[in-house]
Structure formats: structure tokens, C-alpha cells
Image 1 (cartoon, rainbow, N blue to C red):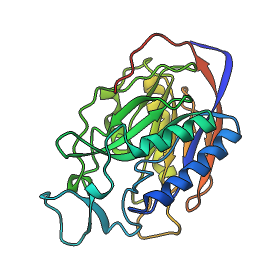
Image 2 (cartoon, rainbow, N blue to C red):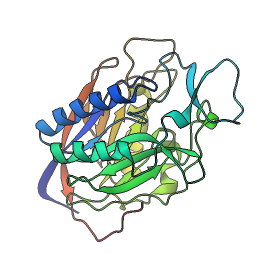
Image 3 (cartoon, one colour):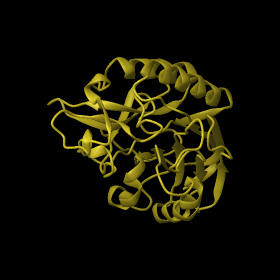
Image 4 (cartoon, rainbow, N blue to C red):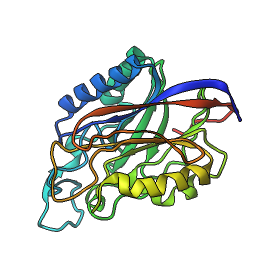
Length: 276
């Protein structure tokens, strides 16, 4: 149920260097403020934006002790970047969300209570509160079994003044209808560090309209980017789709940071409880 009001949403596209968390956080903060300065009220950043998802060559990956892995990979201890939620990184994200005046979705490696690691996206409110957390349900089979525990949190639905939002992380998109039913969401927040054999736009230009129409919601895709072309595809081209499956905005860039903005109609909200 839409009214005459609209809100600007943003997909932040950025490069994240593996394990260089301080520099990644600084980059994220700058881009979030750029989005907020352009009027955005909901800002989505890429999967694992803070710790980095993998090395640019895909050989350097996170690893949890005891997990089997192909010896071709260069392994980095995931516990070096894993943090509890809340923790120091979410404290920093809270300050960024407050200063920019936005709902901010950011990706990190979450440390679980038994020492396990999750590929997690945390949603901060404009007041700096943690209002939602999604642990990636379906880790990408190529490299994430080396470190990531499949998520166990209920599907996240967070009521906002613009409408209820949900979250799916990258490979979750293939089973997103197991998480959400049609009409539950105003907007699906979709961070990714996409890896493919073709540019992301070629796949998602086919896929996203189907997802948006099936769920009856907008979709904000915030993708990572590489500094230059490599042997694999998937960099850049962050995109925003409307609930009717039409394209609202897309980055023309594959190998540069970018902020993609679109004005979307607000939806009537219903009381819902956020899942932490």
C-alpha cells in the first residue's frame, strides 16, 4: 500500500581489501556520508564490506581452523576479523548511521558464542541502534565452507517509517522465497560480493525483475567492486529495482566505488518485531 510520499535509497558500491578493516571502514564511512548528503535515508553496503570477502585473485580467502580446504587457496584466519554483535565495529557503524542520519546495512564477520563465524549483515537505525541482524543462510559453496557457518536467525523483517525491510546476502538470492512471502516487505536489502562468469548486470537484469515481482517489493543490490578487470566477473554494476520489476537506477561502473540513488514510494507499515 503506497502513498504519495517517497524516500531516497542508496546502494553503495565499494572495494574492500581482505583484512584491511580500518581502511575499509574509512572508505565505507565516506561513501555512506556521500549517500546521506545526497538525501538517502536507507543505505546498503556490500557483503563483508568491512573485513573483505576474498582477495582480488580469489586465492586469498578466510579460513576457520579445522575446516577442509583446497591447498590452492591462501588462507587467512577468520578469527582475526570476527567480532561479536554488538562489538567495536557495530559501535563505529552506529556513529556513522547517526552522523549520516540513515538506516545503514553493513556486512561483517560475526563471532558466535561457540567461536563460530557468520557472514552477517547488521542494520543500524538513524539513532545508532542495532535494529536487525541477518546471518547468511546459504554460504557460497565455492569458498565459504572454509569459514562460514550457515545462518540460524529467523528471516529478518524490520519495520521502518518507510515500510518493512528484509535482508538477503548474495547467494541467499537463489532461495530468497524461502525467507519471505509476497507482500511481507517494502524493500529487500541485498548486499553482495558477486562472483560469476559474466558481468553482474547480465544475470541480474534477468533475475531481479522476477524477484521483485514475486515478492512484491523493491530491491536494493549493493555490490563490491575490484580495482581492475580480472579473470572472473561479478564486479560492480550495483542496481535498484522497483516492486513492479522495473529498473530504478544502476551504476555504469564495474571497477570504481559508486553511490547509486533512487527515489522509491513509501509503503504503509504494520507493527512487526525485528529479529536480532
